[in-house]
Image (tube, rainbow, N blue to C red; front, side):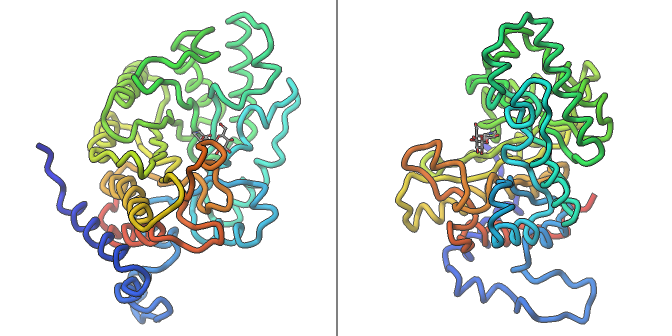
Length: 370
Ligand code: 9MR
């Protein structure tokens, strides 16, 4: 039987209390947002921006950024800068967008985000170098030999990592290489090259930017199970072979209709025991619409499950949400009849999930100094 660590229980109880009691009680546990303290060491108020609270946990808190919204929506732009200390381009670093025509490299949209991040004291998670999705048509409909495909992949990784050299904190080098049962996903890369493309991809990325942290990233690997076992076996082998892999990204796409795993911290611990960092890279918690109060509370709990595990893991270095507002969020376009997955609603009002994240960060402050 698994023991629940005391800290998890304490956070959970506090979060549940705050969330269940709603905004009015939230004010009770929030000691005057504007109150100035004479003590420079005093913690920031509990209702401070997420990035302020996360900084006290030694954690970067991030969001995927829709760069069109960033350019056109002033409220969106303000919140990205104010609340988050790391950003991930939701789409604009993907191969389909950076090399739609073979040999014509287009970095403009991604460069704008990288510059925005620098201006706002944010780090960037690069996403993603090797994937089976959002590939350019010239690549998917071309006929290439395995040797040619290997060279094309190498060229792509070197071009992209070199372009952003020194400006990317973590790269998602390989994304979603496994099926849910832990077998290899039959992608264009696996078909042509077998599993060796993974070690090659990490080596090429490292060669192009030796200082970037290189991640393997996937979904449904948050808790223990066949798929996270497969990732664990992969990274164990890569480490033994001296392949430059630095971390594992647990995406964290949850749904209130499925419930949440209870062993996320345990799973993270086995990865960090290998000398790896971990990160929550794409957290969101969707529901079957319409929303009701239980689903809203469950959503807050889903975010907390991921964040508390991360806070309990010294080497969990960042926690990123996959879009922070329902105004621009991928779920409704992919899962018919589902949505409401983000921390803020479509009018930028923070939900109980936002307050749960805020409270978890505040309660963990100072507990994971390196
Ligand atoms: O949020 C992204 C959405 O805008 C794209 O249309 C979609 C294409 O597959 O990719 C979404 O982001 C995915 C991410 O890159 C990798 N993990 C799953 C994410 C949600 O599908």
